[in-house]
Length: 136
Image (tube, rainbow, N blue to C red; front, side, top):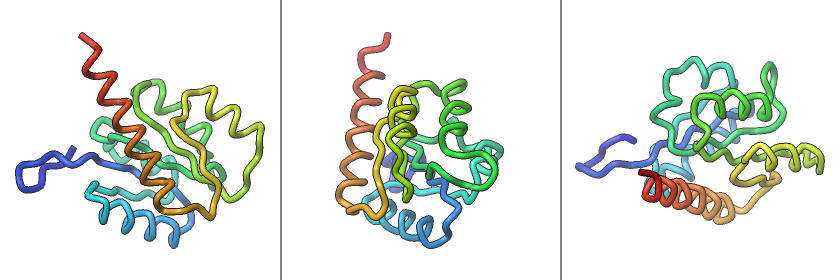
């Protein structure tokens, strides 16, 4: 979480190899009042030291190097409660089933409606907040 005007803003990490997608998602997320951090590669995110501060992760499925499913597995080892939202331009039922079975918060096909993604983020963040409230 980052503080702005004394109010903690959730950090939404975006991992996508397409620069245009990163830029549009960054703009959308910032305009919704969140802090956006963008990465072009999964490895860049994992090595960036931001995992502990991230409130929600949005990742593409297919990327050079480590793909979204492998990124999700790595993140789950350290932050099993971190909501992961997948976005993909290559929708495959098997990949979606695997992502959801591994605990993905949502799986959204490109192109998508901005409201759909923002709704998925808000639901994921509210579930995480509820889990923190019920955990002693």
